[in-house]
Image 1 (spheres, rainbow, N blue to C red):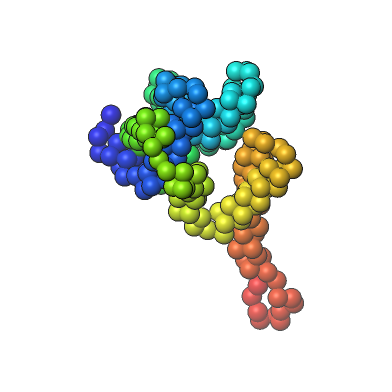
Image 2: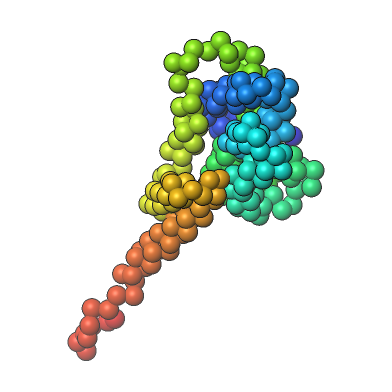
Length: 247
């Protein structure tokens, strides 16, 4: 694996640490506070490796729900990974299966954003997996370390320290750099509104999928209409011309 490309992956995802560390503290402290123990906190972070899904599963378990319902809740929230993997699949088609599986385990929102911004401009196929794994392993280490700290020290953090702000902060840090065009802005606004409306309607974890699908559809439509508007002058006809004029 190319170390230079792995370092590039780390550099690309590093700004997200500002939100991931407090999010990890919450993910570590929550199961311990609920009586599940330090082992459960670390197990969730190493096996699931998805903060929102972890918190949803913990909420189900501590509320008296079954393990099957907890798994379903986590799986539902993580359905967006289907969209991420489908988007990245064409860039990894020539990679060996074990390399793709490693990338799949490390695929989180921040890694996806870094890859999808870089890979369309990068014609070097062999550089993609090192970039992805480098960034993913860095975030995994930060996440597990933060979870451990939260599990061990969470009870000592004063209640007036607003760690809950970390959840939206993680996604805001992820979103802002990618909103660099009109279709991206339309997608962000439409997706956000759809997710909020679905959550208010009681859709639960499906609100994330509703936001993802709505954002993708709105962004695609905005891009299509933008391209048509850009091509319109080429086919514009100003009406009849005289014998000496060219069309």
